[in-house]
Image 1 (cartoon, one colour):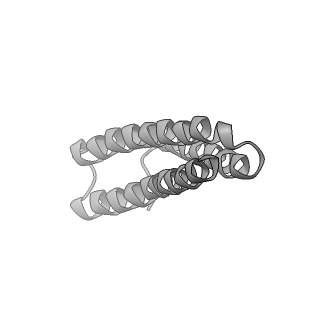
Image 2: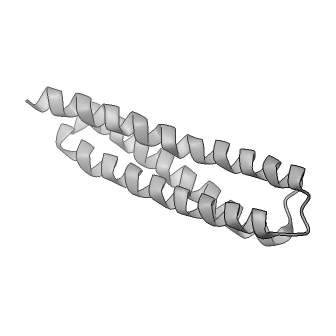
Length: 108
């Protein structure tokens, strides 16, 4: 469904933060094979970016449900879309945590 114009900037920010999270995940995985000592730093960046995505997601959800011009069905469609997008960074954080665990075991 087309998103109202006043939500687009925040949604674009959420896309950018998600992309940053995935770039950090890529660096985390790459470090597993090249520089084990940098894995924790990259994994922390994934967690930081994931938190940023969560923050933007929550702000957008509040705005969606406060917008009286949107029908309830449309609000729930936007909610599902935002939660699925937010799920990408959640999964990235889960993967980064697993990579960190592997790196920790390999360094021991």
